[in-house]
Length: 308
Ligand code: NAD
Image (cartoon, rainbow, N blue to C red; front, side):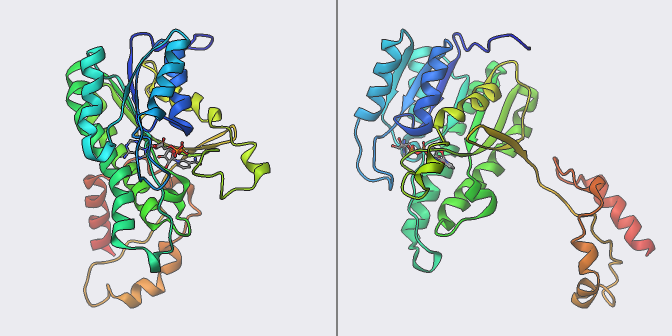
């Protein structure tokens, strides 16, 4: 693959929330590389209120001015996600790549967070992502090709003050990506999650200017295009990226402790006594948990436990 330009000629790409920030730079680059792009954005505020067709229209105009092919869609991902995929089908006849990128913030400490503040953020990110995936899925299955990116966040992986709603939604998108990666594998559907950090209206008031300067959204684009190219087989993976740094994230499992399930001895006190080994990550051979423990592994563990 080295030296080869990664083209997207005739591929149909849907980017949600592509009227600004990261989504816009993805849409422009896909179009530059030959893709037909659905530029979705409802054009609302950072908190999700209001709406305007302008945000998506400006990006479509720019793509067309550069000789590319694009169409605007103004639907809300969580309300009418299926119409966004239908826009791709109606205009271009297929859907190859889906970038679940649309999002809002309603940051507030958990003590003060209302059910509405929690629910609306989960709704846009997680239910929005679900609606797009659900509508694209049958097309991807039947054409035996699909590439999906779910946009997570460092806040989802690690937590962040004031973002219980956002981090819950973002880690939900990781779990969904991991399951779709498994269900889509034999249909050549590859699904990954990214946790970016970039300059946009989401970060411009929370990070200092000298940091923001390094965080150009264009620095996120190369990985997104690489992961969604037809030649890429990477799937079921999470990447964290910012300012030109790209790294993979993975879950780790400690070497753990096997207990004899005898109720007399398998007690909370036994857990306390063995806490150090339960949480011991020193043996790296146990740490690579790219796939969940298989049932056969559990059987093995149970057999070992009974012998203790
Ligand atoms: P942004 O606010 O510039 O972009 C989000 C876009 O989504 C906006 O244009 C907005 O109008 C659109 N949108 C919001 N709700 C929508 C809905 N219901 N339907 C359709 N469109 C909707 O912010 P951004 O930084 O470019 O964020 C893009 C994605 O990256 C988001 O999912 C965000 O959570 C994620 N992210 C960003 C950062 C960062 O550092 N900027 C960090 C982690 C994750």
